[in-house]
Length: 369
Ligand SMILES: O=C(O)CCC(=O)C1=CC=C[C@@H](O)[C@@H]1C(=O)O
Ligand SMILES: [Mg+2]
Image (cartoon, rainbow, N blue to C red; front, side, top):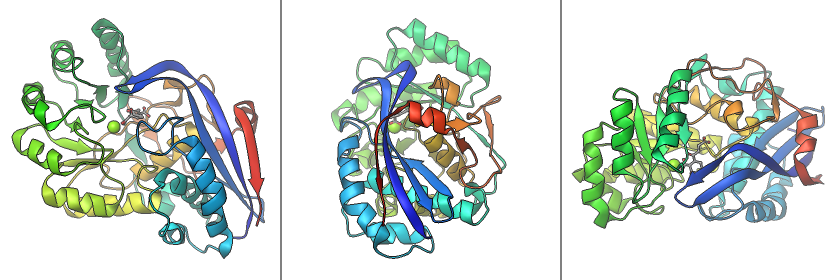
């Protein structure tokens, strides 16, 4: 693919509203933006979804910068890449560091699609022209505030509402939401806030007709989730526990979940994400695309992936304006009655806005073969 240069940018973007999970609150988003330019002047873009601290997984922005610069870029530049599938093979002997790998692989996929003069969605084999999306709502200060925010998103037409739960902010909250919104598609994400000893409490959630409960138990577990799933009628969806198609195969064999949340960064890139999608499709396990508070660049990758056929449940890819005063792409991602129209331009399908990118860049580094 004739790589001319790879630019890493450390970004910092203020969030419109703080996002709180069982681990803490984000007021701004720091991340690494990757641009891979070819000799013809085309650029492929992607972002790393690693956070500043290792609470979601073990990666951070700093570890990603180190891995990308000192290990992954040298491997990428070792010899020419013909197809993006080769990237994950070339990185395979490097353990884990999925988000770092995914950031480079994603930029290669975008560049590849642009060179083929194809929208990324088509390059991946996606057929949908539009996708249905939901929204993920962080933990709020009061139930009243949470209900107000849900009301706003339900009126806007989002197809499902995801709320965060943790011990002490769960049964009563879900009961309140159900009293006010008896018919919405509702799910709860626990980000590993429970243990198997909380089974009785989690069973109480069964009466609220949740679409699923996401990652109730430990981030590295598939055994206890299988015990728990046998005792719950609510489907379990795994997020943090699944890093690869092998993890997915084992979790499905054990009955640890009935749904999988696919995050491109968590599984090391689009190629692995597609393998998990395909495996789940053959086993009739629905999947959906998770979010990591991405800028428009990462959001565009999520949209392209969601065009694959087994993404049958609404994902977390909400509108740019839900997060950002100013996004990095033009046009922004817009959601109309819960629907995103998949762009038909080449590559990620949205134009990176270099002015906005410069505005939010704290520092950058360019590497050349
Ligand atoms: O809107 C989004 O991008 C989804 C936000 C979201 O739910 C999450 C973002 C980051 C980490 C987690 O708290 C969480 C998730 O686990 O899915
Ligand atoms: Mg989650």
